[in-house]
Image (spheres, rainbow, N blue to C red):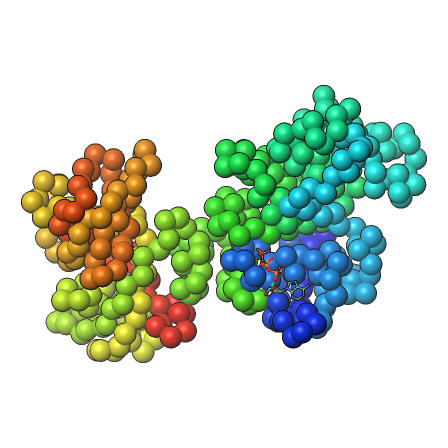
Length: 374
Ligand code: ATP
C-alpha cells in the first residue's frame, strides 16, 4: 500500500512543448484520484511520469517514501491499464493474465492462485479459456484490469480505460471499477476527459488545463465551490451558465446588474464580495447552475414565485426532456441559459419566459483571470 507525493513536477517534451507545469500533489494511500481535463491538458503525461514511461523534466516523485524519478517502471510496484487494453490476441484470458507473472518467473502454483483470485473478483472465471476476440468490450476491459491485479501492485494507473465502451457499458463499468477499488483497497489514479466519470468515481478530482492544476478536491466541493471559471464550467452537466454582470450599490445592498435588471446579492455574499474589492461599476462573470434558476411563462400559468425575486426575460428555444427533470434552453440578451424545471412545467419553443435567479447559490468570477471572487 502506498501514497504518492508529486513535488513541483514539470514535463517538457523535445520541441519545447511543456505538457505539465509545476505540479504538486499528495495522493493518499488507498485513494481513488481522478485526473480530469480537456484533451491535451497533460493528464496522460502525468500518469506516464508516475508509471516511469516518461522522464520527469523537473521535480520529484515519491511512491511511498521512495524517490522514484530514476527507478525503472518494472521496479515501481505499479500497474497500468491502458485505453486499448493491450491484450495479446493469440493468448487465452488465463495466459493474458498470467503473462507478466511468468516473465517475473513466479512459481506456477502461485501464478495460478493469483489469476484465479483475480478472475473470481472480476467475474471472469468462465471466460479463462477464451481469446480476446471472443469477448465483449466490457469483458476485455475486465481482463485488462485482471492482468494489472494479479501483480498485486501498490498503485493502479488507468488511462481512459472505459472510453472504448458504449454508453450503457461505460456506466456499468464505472460502478464496477469504483467497487473494485473498495474491494482491493489500493491506490487508484485514473485519467479521463469525461467529467461524469470523474465526478462519480473519484474520492478526489484534479482538474487540469494546459498543463496546470486548476483545483484539487472532492467532486461535490468543486461542484459547489469552484475555484475558477474553468473548473466551474468543466465539472457539472449541463454546464454552469455564465453571464456578464456589473455591480451596483443600492439602498438594499449590492446588486448584480444584468441588462436592465438588478439582481440583489444576498447580504453575506455582498459583504464577502466587497471585502474582495467589488465596487459600484465593477464587472464580473456571474456563474449559476441550471438548478438554481426557475422558469415561468409571462402568461403566469406557473406557480407564483416570491415577488421580491428579480426576474430576467428571455425566449424559450428548446427543451431537453430527461425524464425526472427537464432542461430548458433560453436566450437571454443574446446568451443561452439553461434552466432546470420540474417535469410538470410545460413550455413551448418561441415562448417569452421569465427566469428567477437564486443568487444565494451563484458565483462571481473575475472577468480576466476567471478566479472565483469570493
Ligand atoms: P488526451 O486526453 O488527448 O490524451 P492529455 O490531457 O492526456 O490529452 P497529454 O497526452 O498529456 O494530454 O499531452 C499534453 C501535451 O503534450 C499536448 O500538447 C501534447 O500534444 C503534448 N505531447 C504529448 N506527448 C508528446 C510527445 N511525445 N512529444 C511532444 N509533445 C507531446
